[in-house]
Length: 207
Image (tube, rainbow, N blue to C red; front, side, top):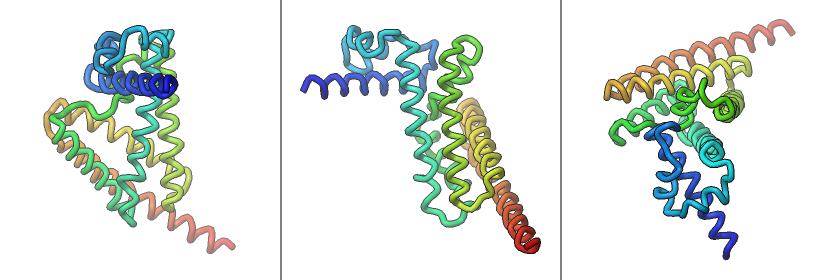
């Protein structure tokens, strides 16, 4: 029973930290806010995270990152054609941020930009999370028929477009940047799939 309660407390603390960083950033979040949001005593935070705020922030980034990358297959698998799947994923993000009154969608991107120069250890954690996104995204698009090199290029473009569009949408208070980015990525998909088919034909003709 004690072990289950302890695990639950740790999970609540990590979730609270992730949500607070999403809305307030790393610098704007205090350990006191985390314990209040988690409904946990201050001592429990330092029990689970002896190094304090940087340690719980690292755990929150890793947990959030692992959850966010699962949205890729969840949003795109229903579509047989990637040319429809990618714009649909951006459209879903546009709808979500609009309905959520323009709150930040991703704590990883927010914190990565904020602490890139001020918190080297935490920047490395964010880089680890984003590196995992790139690896898993590349594997996903390869399974969907994209050439491996092109698949890596595609996931990098999608992540860059998505994070940039989040910033523009929140600032301008319109989902137009996300929808526009989705259409641009859909066009890029068409180019990459054509290149993949052309490469396959060339290899076939060469044999």
